[in-house]
Length: 335
Image (cartoon, rainbow, N blue to C red; front, side, top):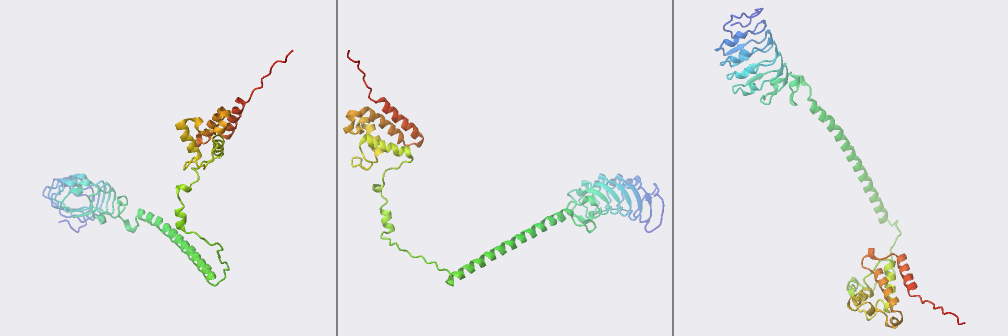
C-alpha cells in the first residue's frame, strides 16, 4: 500500500507488487510492471508520470482496473491494451494523450467504464458508446460531443440558415394575406355599390328568337352542306374553269349530292376527259377545252402543295391560247 504519501522521484525497477500510487511520482512507468502476471488492479492516478504509456501493460491477463488518470502521459494509447480481456475499468483522463483511439478497446467484452476525457485524442471509432467519456478532446467530437459547453458547429450553421428562411417565409405570407384582404374589401365595395343602385346599366333585348336549339341541331344534316370546301384563290379559280368547260353549276341537278369537283373526277375515271365537256362547245373547241380541263384539275387538287401558283396558272392558259391561235395563210399575189 503506497496510498496518500509524498514520495518523490522515480519508482524503482525492483518494485514487485503495487496496488495504488496516489503520490507525486514522476518519470515513466517502468516496463517491468508488464511482468506482474497476477496483477489485478493498478492505480497510479494523481501523480506526475510522463512519457508514453507502456505497451507491456497489455500483458497482464488478470488486470480488471487500470487507472492512470491525472498524470502527464503523452503519445498514443497502446493497441496492446486490447489484450486485457478482463479489463472492466480504464481511466486515462486528464493526460496529454493524442492520436487515434484504438478500436481494440471496443472488443473488450468486460469493459463497462472508460474515461478518456481531457486529452488530445483525434479519431473516435464506432465501438465507443458514451460521449461523456471523451469530453475535452476537441478533435474527437464527431457531431455529437460538446466540449466545455461550446455548441456544435454544424448545428449552429443549420440554425443560422433556418432562421432567415423562416423570417422570409413569414414576410411573404404576411404580404400575401395583405394583398388578399385588399382584393376582398375592394370586391365587397363594388358589390355594395351595385346593390345601392349606382349602376344604371340595364340590358334589354329587342330581338325575339323564333327557333329553338332543337331546330338548330335538326338542321345539321349532310343535305344542307354546300360543297366540301376548298381553300385559296387557286382552288376557287379551278372551280370556275370546271364550270366553263363542263357547262355545269356547282349545285346542278345532274351532279346530285356530289360537288362539282367530285363529279368531274368520278366521270373522268369512268369515261375519260371528253365525257365531262360541254357538248355544245366540244365540237369546235375540244382540244382547247381538254387542256383547260387539265389545268383546272391541277388547281382543285386535294393537296394544297400540289396546286400551282396563280402566276403559273395564268402562264399555262396563255400557252393554250398561243398554241390554238389561228395562223394567217399568206398567198402570193397573182402577176
